[in-house]
Image (cartoon, rainbow, N blue to C red; front, side, top):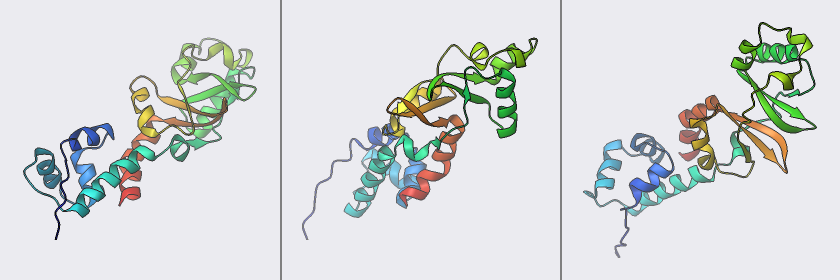
Length: 189
């Protein structure tokens, strides 16, 4: 039987790039966290089948696209609609933010804090565009990997997803947390 040399020196870097903990990778591959730790330290010689599962798992995490995770056709409000309608939509759907569009193109976002700042005014007399945040949330294409947008969530609550410049979906922090907590494990087993 011929032995094959496999260099696992880059395993910790690849795992961290995929934003997985040792425990998450171990669960997805079907080994213990201690086994992954020992692999990363170089104190064990793994079976080739385990190495293949590890690299397959890490590659699969990086291939998941925004289109697969996004909430498609998000509830939006036109910038000319009354701000009071934005409040109604957010309450009805339990949203903490709502994309503001004009002609199908995202122009901003109304967040709970924007509404709170405007509570002393008549929201039915104001447009959604008048109270929306001036800081437009980041946008990403449907084909971008989830891995590529994760850093955006350090500063923003949501990322708007587009196709050909048109809003097609939204990914929120809670979507990302659900994905991280459940979807990775199910997809990669």
